[in-house]
Length: 149
Image (cartoon, rainbow, N blue to C red; front, side, top):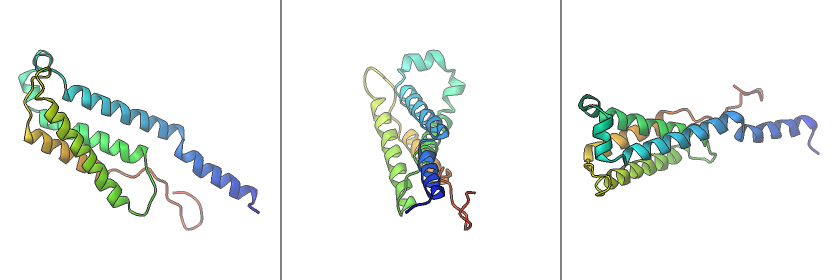
């Protein structure tokens, strides 16, 4: 029979998965993902009207930053379990790299009328790699005494 303290610890562990902090991270991830998709498919006329040529010349920073943000927020918001966190992060990197490639390809649509750039796709993949592999997992680790760090 489980003791009351075991039940409290189990509910605390389960509650951490759905904590308000985790919900905020998930909302931030969804917002960053929507922002990235929206501005990736922003039509050429609107880009030229909104951003100066100087700002547009730094687009590679925007690409790296957006994909770093969505990948790192994903890692923190959805810590996941399993035995292989490396392969989980590798799949995450691959998924966001493919998203970046798909959005770059989507820029060639006549409605969007922007250039599809291999260098932008590489910047997206680089940002996804930074976010996927360098972000802390968001999982709490237990100390040897049973407490939390």
